Image 1 (cartoon, rainbow, N blue to C red):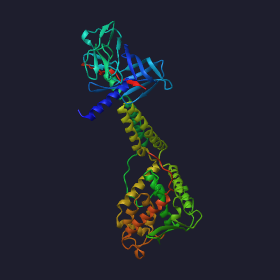
Image 2: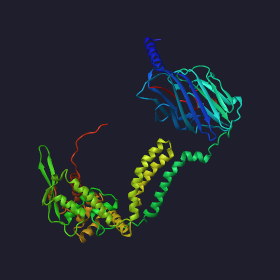
Image 3: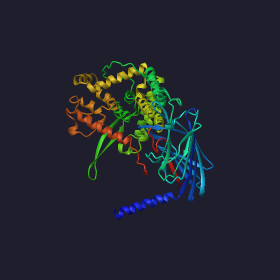
Image 4: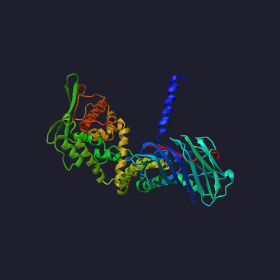
Length: 553
């Protein structure tokens, strides 16, 4: 054996000796009473002798076990520690009792009495019911000089000599260094030798198959899946509410050449996808341009290394009639009493105007009563259901109610998926929505002969429909369909293009213009950067329920 290995073994022995010298267990007595319901009442009396000053002991009691290839979880309740302060903590496998006073040291002989009740700690075999209990636990860090035990069974079941066994030694051993007997309805006995750290004593008792009432298949099912009824019931409720209050009749898609009258491009963009996006307000720029309220000019200047691009807006007149609140907010925020404004001057300031206008646009759509009141309320409630489902799912997972936890996750997803379909249109809302769908479909499929005819009827057709294409996020696609039909961009837009016109490739303008609108959107929504940063049947010793171990602190 090498020198280094001897040194390592020596250090391990010293470490073990250091742990052992804190205290010893002079006597470990376990009194168990099994009541007719199958509940197990446990009292542990642990007599220790501290060899140095310590605050007390800690006792680790497992509540999750792997027996016969199955995972069992017992319920531990009504935990008491007699005469000493104690703290409880739970991890995935153990209940840990920290017994003693942090402000006081003890030494010499001390007694600790621990009481608790246990449920679901039975093994139900085909022809018998088994009580299988690790009396001391095999995870004590100190030697145990003596073990005494007594298990009192209600109704004094008839037991033959081969129905009860005791096992001693380390985990998995089948030592017989203990006495076991059955007298007066109680199995009892004591150890015949002391136990080293890691050794313990286990008792197995074979009882009649009907000694305690076995849970029915339905009870086992409900215990495992009963809480699944909560998400399933809520899911059924949500689906039922959607079927009654949110399900819309599918209309026949009819192509429309114009947007619906009285619906602005902003409202069209917000309504068709039920989402208020930045482009739903950016589309007001070409909308105002087409109606003679402003002009937009692309400008270039020479920087130190590269050319710099900017845009300017010129107000031609104030908004006429009774503009909607969101239009007035954006228009006033854009010019603010000025006639000319540079886009770069709005950087990091205009975002507050956009936020206010988004809220106003949302309310403008709501005030049109395009959705039924009940479906609108359900639409608003569903996100809260989804939000509350997540912590409930986590709680169920912690409690090992896996099906119920998974059900809550499904409920959250379903609530979010059904949120948009939950909205049911009014008669007017349905007509507007179907009209918008038809117009959006035309933007996608329009052919040149039809566009030529529309331009003959109204030469400003492109100017009037471009804002809607922007709101639908289809501006570039819409512009390309006008290749060969235009040579110049709209009169209100002044940009850089070769020779003063785009020739037959009008789609290039559409692509350039889409880029311009992206730049406008970027500036309109830019925010100043914030400062600061964050940081980052055959038994064995150690088998059965009960068990655990402990140490001192």
